[in-house]
Image (cartoon, rainbow, N blue to C red; front, side):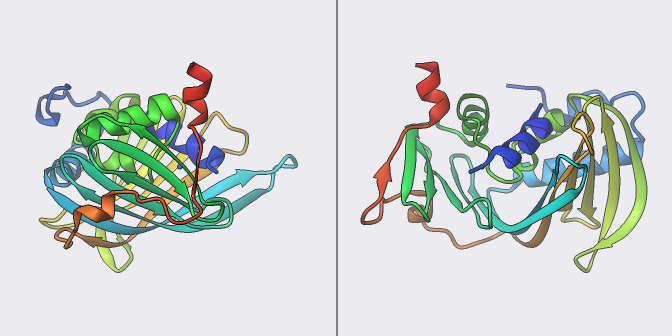
Length: 250
């Protein structure tokens, strides 16, 4: 499950299906919530390129039950069908994520360690490869996959449309979905550019029900991008290492 894995990856981080139109609506999901979610996933998956500046917040529950929040800025840049760059900065993680259609590289500027592996030749396949083979997830990738509607809805048991709310100065549709192990909320901008504005995941099977959230601070649907942005060039003094999951599999 993408959302469960995203939360787990955030805690541990040192980071052909049918079309959504043909995907049946889940019983128990408000038709209006379903319509807004379909519109958002269709719009985002149809963008050839975009960039977003975000802020992620991770809740950690201490052994005595206190919740501690850790907030960090992050960003993601996508050029379909086969390029992605993302970075996260903060107290517990400082990483850069490069995908140029041929290889995937994770780089830690603080230590100058990097790991690089050959990767599938399209974005959706790379996201799945990184998640299942490397336990690596760039921030918010379950919202940008072209199969996002199916992936988000695969374990949903109920969904509610909560009305309009203001997030970051934008009027947004507020949606709330429930699953067996996680609940999640999504705020989608009102109008003909239904981009995600905020995404909150609640892990119900973890003591204290901690949350992981992404706030989209800035969205650009037509950024000026150079191929070099997605290609990793090791800086002076950089040291290569292997991805641990791959070493274990071997």
